[in-house]
Image (cartoon, rainbow, N blue to C red; front, side, top):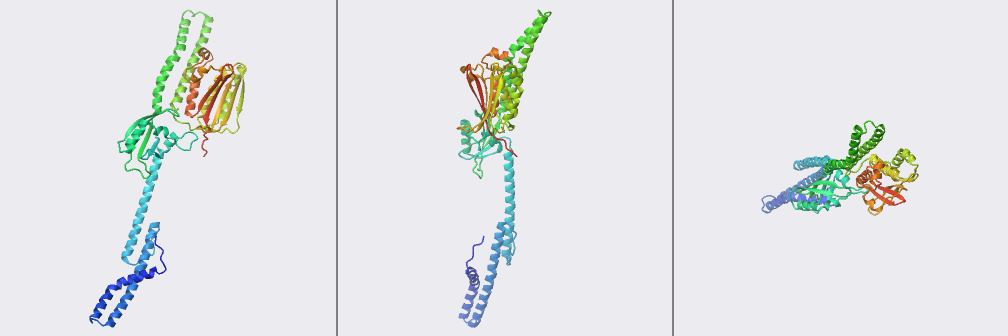
Length: 464
């Protein structure tokens, strides 16, 4: 940009230029006149001519400098030059400046384009990527990292548990001091246990935004869960299926031997065998369901669930069983319960399991209550939705309550088997709620019934 000119500045510049041009010839003319080499009058006229020529040259020079200044300002602003200087050297300077500015703009646009492309690539990476500064503070997170570490209802990612991990913290400190890249295995126990492998890479030189350390996270939870699922499935199948399978084998041997011609015994044994086969089928179905849920437990759901509709639909499906036990169901569904981000099928399974338990363990002719209502924020817990399923059955002894969500744990094993329980219903509920970052609370008093309360974060789905 050109500096504003004062009212007398152009005249001073022109006069100064004229004086600079005429000073040397005028001095020579004065010396010649003093030595009588030329007449003083001639020297005076020549000096006057030099002064006029100097003024004209100064005016041309000043105007071309002004044109050059304007040309440079237009080049800086990205506009094409106009009214170039008349003097060839200054014209060449103006043209070179325009070419240089065009080249700089083109390179700047190329850099911006590459930068935007790099941001899109980083944002689109499936693995979480985090950039830290020299002190280990987060500078940049890609979309996968924000999704992985942002709690339900929160606006920003929470990296506290990750960055406080001792092994990872030591690796970050070594990378900040110029150490070599290294991989660190990290287990995060909350909110759901995850197995991560973190690649720690030092950035030298640092990024313009101060980024000094790059963390690339690979989630190995699924692979570990698959390995554990295989081991658990074999162990559980071996333990839980052994008894009904032994019963079936025994009855088959009896039917093929002593009871081969006993019609009455055959009918009775076949009924028992059918019950045992159904029990095995339920066990296998529940074990497979639990295994599938555990495999995806570490990944938050992305669908949408309308809890009001799910409660009504599940209650209607159980009406025949409820009527068979002469029970009545009471619904208390609050207004304003909006859809949430959740896996609709899994939440339907939670509601079905809790209602199924209420029907199984409630008393004949009793009451089943279902209450659904929003809950306000409380401490670290954000706003949510509470679903309470209660019955007026015999209740649960206090010492059993902490273990009810363990797989295959039963308060009364004989009664549970008699009414078709597998001991996996509440374990399935617990793992589904873990995936949804929810919780399950159990309250019971012997002789007065039980209440199972599910809490879920009220994270509303985005609308396009």
